[in-house]
Amino acid sequence: MMRKFLSILLSVMLMFCFAFAAGCGNGDDGADTEDHGDAVTEINYDTDEPVTLQYAAWNVSTEDDDTVMEREMIAQYEADHPNVTIEVLENIDYDEGYMDSLRNLAAAGDLPDIVMCSVVPDMLTEGYFADINEIAPKDPEWTDIPKSIEAATHFGDGIYMVPSALFMCGVFTNDDLFDAANVDQLQPGYSWDEMLAAIKKLTNPSKHILGINEVTYFPDWIPNYLNEGLGQFSYDGENFHLDSPDFIQAIKMCNEIRKGKYSYDSLTADEQKYYKAEGWWDVWPQGKMAMVYDWSWSIPDFEGTADTINSRFIGMPGNQNFVCPDYVGISANCEYPEVAFGFIKWMTFGKEGALNRINLRDDNDYFLESLPLSTNGEVTSAYFANAFPGMEDAYAEIDNSIIEGETWIPGWVNALYDGQTGLSITSGGNKIANATMRDLMWAAMSGDINISDYADQMNTFANGTAAKAKANLNSALGH
Image (cartoon, rainbow, N blue to C red; front, side, top):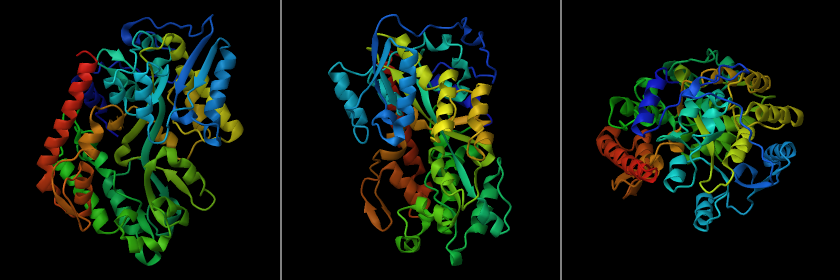
């Protein structure tokens, strides 16, 4: 996805004072002892005294079928470490109030020892996590984490997070529709022009066949596709460039698809009624959609139609990788950070735990939601021996990844989605007095407003909002 990604990511790290500790596993079982400038040695994460660690994570919140694998991973860890007890917090609102629950616990001095999160800057700004820079780089398997993912664990001079899950976004194809229409199937590395041509050729209103599901999130990556110097949403590591020709062109490219009614999200409510669907996800099983732009966590939906639809994952145009990690951190008040890190390693990037997780998948037909967090050859070979078609090819480009900004760039959500701009527009026939950034982008993609008329104001708002959030984070970290 971003062939010049490392230089751009380094810029991001510097501007946010993120120390880039480069290092990626080489696929061998051995450890590289020279990375990070320190001798890497085996660390004993066990304990001779009884230790109880509280664990807050949304994927183990209940005992239902969706969380059986996580519970089994915990049980195996406890069996291997009889002096360590993992206490899963069951009293957190995992649906709507996760952050509020954590704030309440922190205010009472009861923040769990280990906390899973998706929006890291918010957690750091509130001072929740301990710096693990004295632990993580010394682990011989830390360098096996994909370098693009590992780099985003650095804030200032410290390392505060461990990747806990990895998801990839891209295009899934219905190859049967390609064949029926005599359209060449798209292959990894395909171009935007090839994709757009296929979308147009495969859309067949008379048969109610759609080229693609939606374009809502295309502005995330098109600017980078057009200009390798730009990242997600035109972010260059320091500033957004929503007023750039690349971002404006990205919006217009989305508008072309919606104007032509090539996507489900471009249809009117009456036109969508034909499909009797709650959303585009109900159209795919009907065999009426040639391509879907979605995340790897939805693979079970595509596997569920394997008997009726031949489908593949072909990634992003130009072999771009667009990934979204979850993270887990050790709370600032944890009394046993080394023991906590050992447990986290087992659950996330460690070879032993990763292989155990893959065995659970294969033995019990579980869905392994996360892509490998370790590039160790034994792990990746075992994982992709039973994976959705095309995922292995996409993962091979994992080091050329752009990370979903919401997870690690301060102020991202308000800067690009929820922030109210004070601008008034009319969209979808409705007047919006104080449009959010999301409102403006959607109106532009829908053709209700001209993006060129609003780009300067949107860019000023986004950069101002992000700058304030960055300042707050730097203050919290003592910079």
